[in-house]
Amino acid sequence: MNEFGNTKRIRRAARSIVLSPAGRVLLFRFDLSDRPPFWVTPGGECDPHETFEQAACRELFEETGLTHEPGPQIARTTPEFITVEGEPVQADERYFLIRVEEEVITTAHHTELEQKVMTQHRWFSLADLAQWPEAIFPETLSVIIEEAQRSDPS
Image: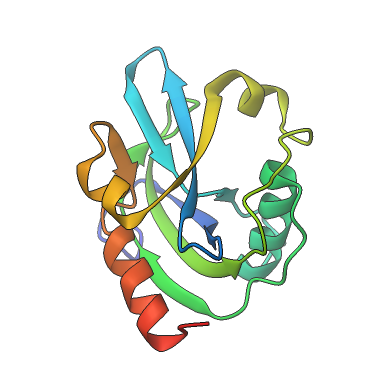
């Protein structure tokens, strides 16, 4: 039994909420054969030796080409889900706010798996998030962004 009361492996992950000057957030679309498409923030599983902050920096660079310090953790979610590789897990996901100067990234550092399943990226406004027809994770992303902007309006 793990700290969340189940027997699933705890998957530690760091995710970045990347905001542009226009207040738009960067998301990646995942297309998998066994479920409908969904969109998520940049990030991924921590390596065994990494802190959440170290993983946030590494994942941000690998997925976007951006090099930013993660700053303070602004949110935590603990969903249960099935990974891209098909493993049921109990997640412990920490979110960090990253502000960028422009809406430009590179996907040149994606792994082979990321190249296969991360088929698109897009900058979403809060209005886009509210009406988007496909799943967006975390489901509370709009609330997390609004709270972050209230506490750090820069």
